[in-house]
Image 1 (cartoon, rainbow, N blue to C red):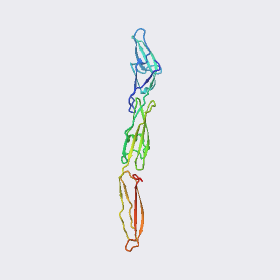
Image 2: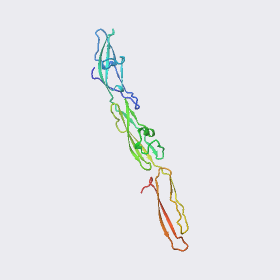
Image 3: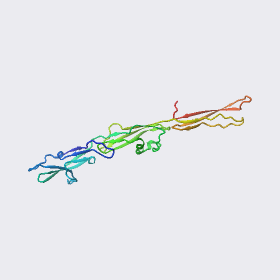
Image 4: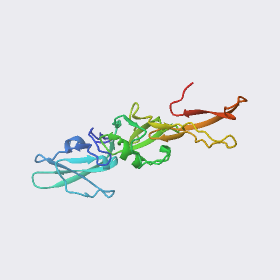
Length: 259
């Protein structure tokens, strides 16, 4: 026969090991071999450019993903007395299956969870670092498949936000998965803080008593700022204070503030 194309069968892969095969038998390439005195026995093997077998002739030839491309195949014909003759054929081995991409499950975590293995800017993290924290995508194909990834999104200064990891599975023939293969990572905020306001203070008329500011202890994903506005209230009444200081404190947690 001439012009034979063979497709690698569908299978599964773990991203490294290929499992797709095609089985070629002598009958598939024989085009009527015969002998004048007896029947013939057919056998098949790979041959090199000089048409010399590189393996033993057998009843079948197993083609794998490593054979994708042109494979020269030899046909050996033997009669009842052991006389032999040979012919050869170039077989085109193809992979026409589109790979499948399976993303890891969505992840929802708080801004307090330990992600110390990741850099502060997740855009600067490596695929290996993200796989270790959020899981890895899997590619399924009859031949070897490679997973590539892009990431978009960010978190704000409070550590809250979301990311989208987009994966592409590519096989050795250059085919990529159909549809989208994405993982969504959501980081939600937790507010936990302590505010300690100062007590009233007093002093002699000639001295201004010291007064403290607001003590803000951020215990979770908070970003607290405080300001103080001081008014001086004077009095002329006998026996009363020389003046009073009225301190108004403004406290904003930017991680939960809205208008």
